[in-house]
Image 1 (cartoon, rainbow, N blue to C red):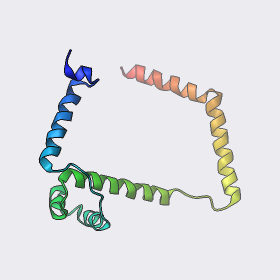
Image 2: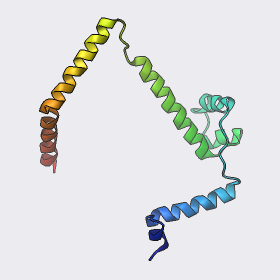
Image 3: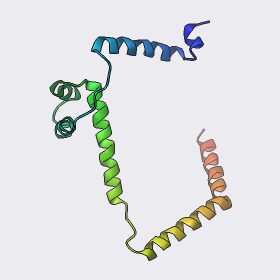
Image 4: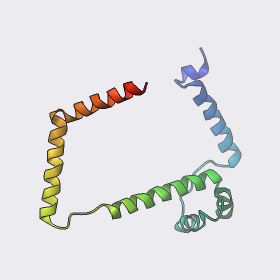
Length: 129
């Protein structure tokens, strides 16, 4: 039996695992150090101006680390923007109206509307094939 099957891994996963080990051995300790506020600020300010590799070089991080952190920072930014765009109820009456509308929607979905929509979508998919 192959060694990757014994470990419960697929062949492509086994090869990735060994290559990660090799990479961490080459790059040093392989331990992650926390990002400082200064590093995050530098990444935000230079994202469109420098490449990930150049940013990493200046702050002493790898290209992959900068890519991951910039992705995380972008995700946080988008979540903040969405939260700001979402209208918040300004009065108790408005909140009650929203709750009532959501309750009606949930009842409709429980009452079979969801099943009808699924059947309709399945028919569309079948037609495309």
